[in-house]
Length: 118
Image 1 (tube, rainbow, N blue to C red):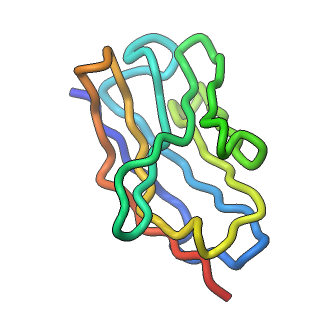
Image 2 (image 1 turned 135 degrees about the horizontal axis):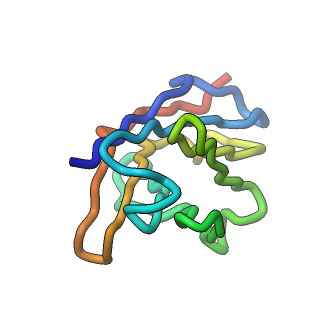
């Protein structure tokens, strides 16, 4: 059973970089599942796909966030991370990591609230 857990600070100041890590168990970021993604949900809105890293190391980003987003992985720790630079209060959201075997078979972390505020 694939399990994911987000970790990182819950409060980030404007203009700083938001950094989160997803720790994986029950699967391998280098083999299966195929894709490892970051998804967020701002208050009162739906889910927003931010980007993903695939098991071969290739990365993909939402066009609206590409310039500020970096997804990387640490294969020795079976973790992947999110870096979102130059944050504003509009980046306040619940952030989730997600793993997908296929478009209809996903595994979710519990989500972590990140607030951007001075």
